[in-house]
Length: 116
Image (cartoon, rainbow, N blue to C red; front, top):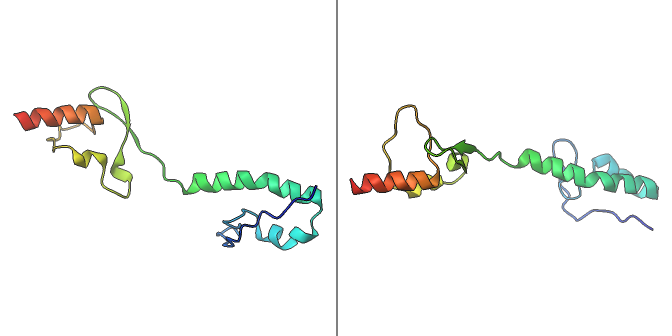
């Protein structure tokens, strides 16, 4: 069985000299044709781990908050590139010492303030 090159023609190296297309190191790319089938198989086994490690470093951490009223956990959108989901709700007057509310509690609080 011949181990084919994983090259997908996205040849861009990151700061560690790892290709962002196939996740081989520059040395592995240069030596690929000289590698034995066993060496190629060893490299192929490492590529998935390199891809996963790279993706875990580049994905932003999801901010999880706990609602002050009901204790539910929810995604806080304030760290996202776009406006937070809470900006779609009517404004609620902040309470000293209290942090964010979950979508359900914020909707309820906003509805009470709008009716008042």
